[in-house]
Length: 76
Image 1 (cartoon, helix red, strand yellow):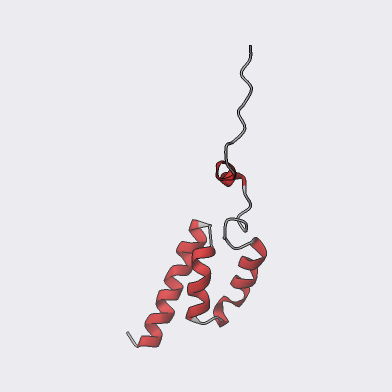
Image 2 (cartoon, helix red, strand yellow):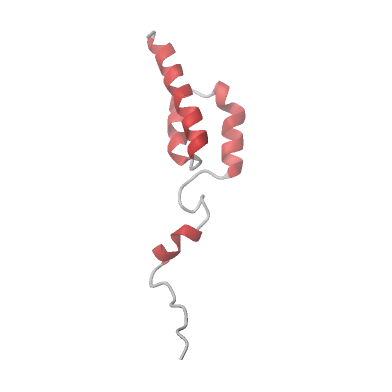
């Protein structure tokens, strides 16, 4: 008797297969629009978008920009 693959017992077992947007991350279109407007966005808009960016390299690139903008505004 050959063992059949078992069905996942809950939707959480399939989370790795879900679309990024379903998991709360920004879509490619949202990120593209964000990057297009990045130089014109205020710190609040950048701060809201950062947790939604799943790409670690992009996140590391944008985080220092936010810190620099905040530092410039505070005069330090």
